[in-house]
Amino acid sequence: KRLILIGPPGSGKGTQSPIIKDEYCLCHLATGDMLRAAVAAKTPLGLKAKEAMDKGELVSDDLVVGIIDEAMKKPSCQKGFILDGFPRTVVQAQKLDEMLAKRGTKIDKVLNFAIDDAILEERITGRWIHPTSGRTYHSKFAPPKVPGTDDVTGEPLIQRKDDTAEVLKSRLEAFHRQTEPVLLEDIGLCFIEGKINVIDYYSKKRVVAQLHADKPPKEVTAEVQKALS
Ligand code: ADP
Ligand code: ADP
Ligand code: ADP
Image (cartoon, rainbow, N blue to C red; front, side, top):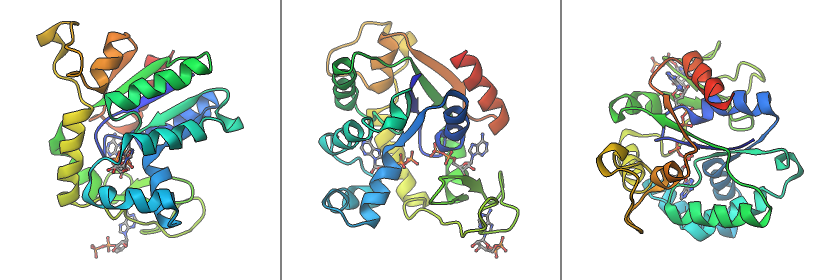
């Protein structure tokens, strides 16, 4: 399967990804994770991305498209992939289509993690991550057995530098402007070229499944499985 996960920061994309990945034998490509790794390693790409990331703004389309194009060549991605946090703009979506067309494939499903902004601040500020595995915890909703420690490896957990209430505001603003749909019911399926955003773009192709991302993790997993069956 070739899947896209779309949702605001904290909507649960990273929490659901490992479950979907294992069930369908897919690779997990999260542009945010790849960019953070590049920043940490101080690669030329990381140096270019850092400023925008610190402010919660999007990095340039060319940069992320390049990362994805490269990553999709990995052997582990040949059975299919989960794109987490990409595409975030219509330009990225169009470039992705071109990339897939060259490979003779296309996107099977877009999972839209729908959730109100009001819930996200608590989720984001309580998020703890095991950097090497990507396992995600929450100080209140999914606490690790030992505070600050990964359940599986015993290694320390970290908090992301941009997981603050303040940076979340710009990340949400970017999400609403570029990624989220205007109400489909209001405009029908006729879009004005250049005005549509990412979810509209895929709605037109009729591949979007809506999830209630405000439900408990297990219920969201059940909705994901239903959408993919
Ligand atoms: P995203 O990858 O979309 O930014 P995460 O999966 O990292 O979001 O989730 C953000 C935080 O919220 C994490 O700390 C995670 O443990 C917690 N979380 C994820 N899904 C749920 C849920 N359904 N209910 C409550 N908390 C959740
Ligand atoms: P979130 O928790 O908001 O889903 P991510 O880990 O996906 O965050 O992204 C972190 C940051 O990396 C974003 O704020 C943005 O600066 C950058 N980024 C990640 N993916 C993209 C993308 N597809 N296009 C542009 N910028 C991106
Ligand atoms: P506080 O003193 O703020 O109440 P706690 O006693 O709950 O904090 O935890 C002490 C430290 O343990 C925190 O500063 C943090 O480093 C870590 N910690 C707490 N909860 C978690 C969690 N769910 N995941 C990871 N680390 C945590």
